[in-house]
Image (tube, rainbow, N blue to C red; front, side, top):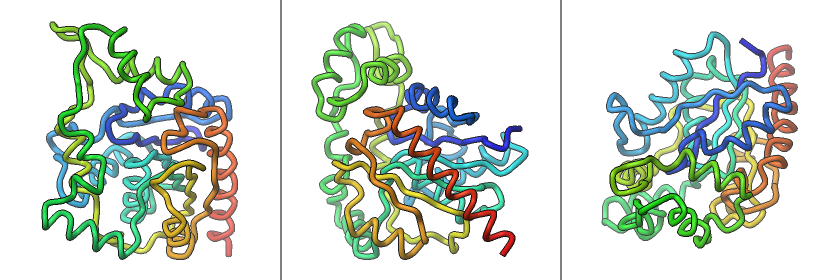
Length: 270
């Protein structure tokens, strides 16, 4: 097992192989990349409130696959799962790098809790846009035209959009459909955690946030810096920057990993 093993966790709705361009550039920096193909699709770990089963699924995967601690890298949902897993089982992780992940302040957590109880969670999460969204097309050309017209995919590098169409769609009798179960994607949005981490975070952590992202606001960056002593860096692009700028993202990930591992080695020797 290489000492530079990364376990990558994907964003909600984006199967891990969709990040093929990012993985290729990380490989250029000497990293081995492992991942779970799709979070939330194993009946042993059904999606539940506060993503507790999704965190357990990630811990189970890392424990089963690797003989040595890994570097956890995760985009959006995947970053939060990585952070939570590292807080619960720090011996499994050397470092955590989150890519534009939803980290809630205490006020945010209160709002989310009330939204769940009062039934307006779809208004404050992407669940409202996900429900009723188109999920099948007559052929891949029409699917490509559909996604290319959507703002979320507007700035994807062409190769990244191609990979999403390749690994995010599946053939069926009617044409093609989303491979990531829409009901699962919707449930993940509706069960966003409103509880703090169970245990104190001791694993070196970094957050990369998109320059134009609305997911990670200033208050979130201030919170993660103060609460978790995380390294926080701005990168080009929006919430989907791993698909918009995969080479730059890989370079930034490599840079912060180098910093975090030095920090971790110092902490062990101190």
